[in-house]
Every structure is written in C-alpha cells, then in structure tokens.
Length: 358
Ligand code: ATP
Image (tube, rainbow, N blue to C red):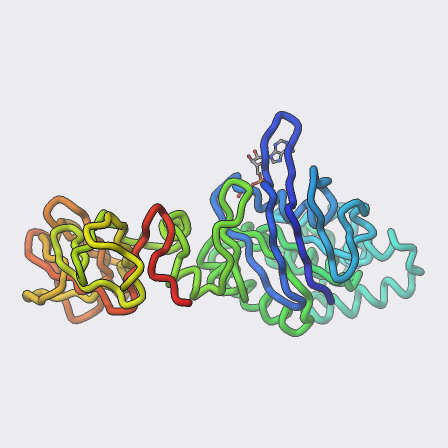
C-alpha cells in the first residue's frame, strides 16, 4: 500500500486550459479520498495525471516512496475504474479480469486462478463465462473493480464508478465499495460530482475549483465548517443561507435580525465590519411563535422533503431557508421564526471563514 503525494502539480492542455494549477495534495496510505467539485474543475484530469494517462506539465506525483511523474501508466502500480467501466465487450468476465495480468505476462493458469479468486470475493462466481453485454450495470461495475483489483495495485483510482447505476443499486454499491476498500486497505482516490456520495463514503474530501483545491477535510469539517464561501455554497443538498451582515459590538445584524456573535469570532472582527453570515437550513430551529435572537418573516414557500419540510421565510425582502421537522405546520402567508443554533453559525470576511476553530 502507499500514500500519494502531489507537489505543485500543473496540467495545461494544448489550447491553454489550465486544468490543474500548482496543486498540492497528500492522500494518506489506506485512505478513501474523494475529489469533489463542479464540472470542469479538473477532477478527472487529476486522476488521469496520477494514473499516467495524462502527462504533468510541471510538478511531481509520488506513489509511496517512488517519484512516478515520468513513468508510463503500466509501471505506476495503479488500478483504475472508469465511469463507463471500459470492459472489453468480446471477452468473457474471466478474460476481462485477467487482462492486466496477461499484459504483465502472468502465465495463463495462474491468471485464471487469480481472476477466479477476485471474482469470488466480489460475488461474480456464477458469471465468469458471460460477456459484459449479458451483465447488469452493477455486475459490470464489479467486473471493472475485479479487473482493477486482480493486478493487486498499490493504489485505486475510481472515476465516477457509480454514476451508471440506478438510485437503489448505487446505494448498495456505495456500501459494498466502502467495505471492500476497508478490507483491502488500498489507498483510493474517488472522483464524484455527487456530494452525498462523497460525504457518505470518504475519509476525507478535497473540494476543487478551477484546477485548485479550496478545502481538504473530513466530511463533517467540509459540511459543518466550510473554509470559504465557495465551499459553503457548493456543499449541501439545500444551500446554506449566506446573508450580508454587519458586526455590532458583541452582536451581528443580518436580514434585520440582531443575533449573537459566534464565540470564535470575538476579537477577530471589528465593530461595524461587513461580513457574510452563514447558517445551514438544517441548523435553524423553527418556531411558529415569537422568539428572541431569531429571523422573523413571512412564510413564502413550504416544500415537502419527506420527513421534513423546507420553508422559505421572507425576512424583510431577504429569503432565509429553514428545514422544519415534524410537529410544526407552517402555512404560506403566516409568520415564522428561525433561531440559529449556537456553534453552527459561520462568519465570512472577504470570502474566508473568520470563526475558524484552532
Ligand atoms: P466533470 O465533472 O465534468 O467530468 P472534471 O472536474 O472531471 O469535470 P476535467 O475533465 O478534469 O474536469 O477537465 C478540466 C478542464 O480541462 C476542463 O476545462 C476541460 O474542458 C479541460 N480538458 C479536459 N481534457 C482536455 C483535453 N484533452 N484537451 C483540452 N482540454 C481538456
């Protein structure tokens, strides 16, 4: 097994697109690491550059104690699974799984035995003689994983491997993949644009924007304490409330509400300073009756989320979103109050988090 270390990694494509911009990243040995970010931010390019399918313009990639920057893909000891699985349609499951070993000139019997072992571990025993066209999406994904595993790489690189699966199969595959990775302990870098997937599966996440990393952290760090406004607005299935605000002594005024200043912000902001007040809809407690230290407004929209509702309050022209649990029945046109939970409020100045926990 091995750590992966990238230093000042840069990839400029012909035509001038800077897909990776002096990027530094260290993935620990045995870690399950997710790359998350909007379309075009460079996730796939990063993975392909680690795999050796793209050459770095400058900078270095190390796998374990080896500098692999100039090595061809076959000599980097990585297993890669692509979004479309890239299985060979004319080959059986066994031959697909054994293919990387064939390239490495492993004798036929040995590679078929190894392929059968891996296939058994992934529950593919009964399917060895089939061709990819005769398999479901989930089975094809397992064959692609088995092929990547069979060569016993030191590193797994997975590029949106679950994106072709339907919602239910995807959930199953998530659990399966995470369990398998845990058992094998293989350092894994996983690209996804599905943040729920990254939050649910990864040990740590890097959030990328335009070829750079904007934050690296555990799922809860990235979700609860986004380091900047880019990550704050990118992460979260219901977007974070980000309100223009102003510091007033020990308080902060946002959307007309006077609210406590977060503890960690004391001494880091000055009176009358403009800031952005951030609070997730999940971290606002709803009340149908007046409360102090709350956003107060008219209920504009109520959306059913299943077990909860997403309520949009019109607070003097500023929209504030609140996730409201059972026991409340907000009605459009009525008044509602939303109290920020202490410890869950984030203040941003010039786009960066002020109340960082050190
Ligand atoms: P997505 O989530 O849409 O797959 P991504 O984050 O994986 O996006 P990349 O595919 O890495 O993004 O692309 C990063 C940037 O590099 C984009 O602007 C893309 O258009 C550009 N790019 C990627 N491959 C090439 C190429 N072969 N030649 C020129 N530009 C490229």
